[in-house]
Image (cartoon, rainbow, N blue to C red):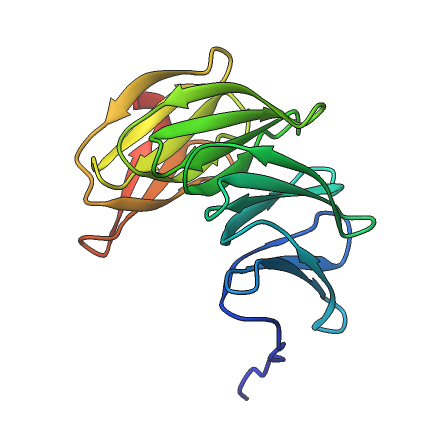
Length: 212
């Protein structure tokens, strides 16, 4: 028989979602409404809508599920949402046209790719302040951290490269070439492989992280 799922009305132009660990919630950025919708997974209905900055694109939930970090590309900022209250508790200025968001496995740092600044902002979650800015390639959009937290991978769409960052020093240790407008990026749960989506060729490149 056919599998049927519920269609949940939200707001204009949903762009990105992520589940909240430990609780029955899904958070979705809604670009045209400049907000984040909170969907209950038991009811498949929007339970709350939180106003954020201009042009929210991507978001990430902390490992303990207490906070959501939202990249607002239009206002060059990151909104921090307290999941207990669904209210913004901090707004952090980052680079221009911020896109991808990744959080360290221990929850101490947040990494934000700034597409028009060609940088990655490092945010300390304890203080919600930017502690470092890392230059990368042209038009960084996708970002992923390894399960051990030791490496950060950033896709640079315009330079068709992937920057490899050592999170201990916040420096680029390698630049991998041979992509075609790389956008999305993901690391396997064991940290052994990296998958990179190439927008120009509609392909996925697989990299062994031990030899990157």
